Amino acid sequence: MASERSINVGGVQIGGGAPVVVQSMTLTKTHDVEATTAQVAALASAGCEIVRVAVPKSEDADALPKLVRLSPIPVIADIHFNASLALRAIEAGVAAVRINPGNIGGPDKVAEVVRAAKAAGMPMRIGANSGSLPKHLSDLAQSDQAEALVEAALEEVRLLESLDYYDFKISVKSSHVPTMIRAYRLLASKVPYPLHLGVTEAGTPFSGSVKSAVGMGALLVDGIGDTVRVSLTADPVEEVKTAFEILKALGLRERGPIMIACPSCGRDNVGVQNLAEKVEERLHAYPQHFEVAVLGCAVNGPGEAGDADFGIAGGRDVGFVYAHGRVLKKVSSDILVDELFHAIDEWIADGMHRPKRLKMAKPAALAMAEASLIPIE
Image 1 (cartoon, rainbow, N blue to C red):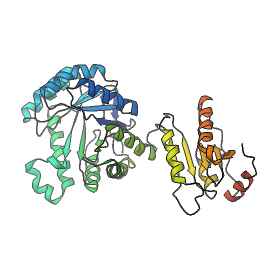
Image 2: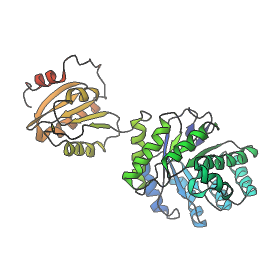
Image 3: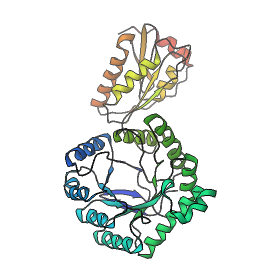
């Protein structure tokens, strides 16, 4: 269920059926303009579409006009505890502000920020985190933290609606994946506003990516969620990469190649893990969207490679390069990866035309037997 409403963050539409937007947050001190702009540039190169910067101090607010001017993507100012900093961020021309109406200084301060945002035509992000729920919801949180998260968010929604302000997105993040999933499902059934998905404080790249994929994936596959941030204890570029992998796996976004690789097993004649790692490393240089299959033996090679744009199936001494469901060539194993990328580069240079595929009528074993008769190039 796509959100009914949408917001515009510096020219990027979020919600209302728009593609799911990938965002991240800088790790640098925002007042260090050189370091922050360098990190924003790296994030933009990785595909990040919106970036959030922390503004805890006056000197960070001082840096915002220059950061906004230099950033290749919209900048969101992250504000807590200080309404005056939110006002300065709005004046600096950021694309949006993230505030927590519960800690910004009371309803009067919220109203002041909302008036400034309305005058500037600027959207906000509001919402709750499981680690910072209001004290008056502590009993509810003890019995059902997801319910408490949603109620905290709805209190903020009601406050902004009472101020005749509707230009916002909402988050209800938790580090506990089942709680996060339940909270977003409940919230999605109650509001028409865009939802910002995230598993907060997800962890290191391995565990955090798994938790984020499970939490976000469970929601996105049901159409819940309009923008995502993968919160990793890592370089934020890794957050962007992981976010796109999640969206690509669900068929929601296309950015860069997708690799299919078979698991290692006793039929593996070539060391498929090593082969797959080599291919994956080289694929990082390609922004184009296509699929590559890496197989370690003849059993699944023809079928799996047939579904991908390109593929390789390894053997002890020779391997096979596939293109669009057909065996392209048989080559020595030591040049198998190079020949794969030579074929990919030629295809890209020729315009990436995908020929019409024919269903494979022959069993995989027969197809491989026939391919084995091809001379080695």
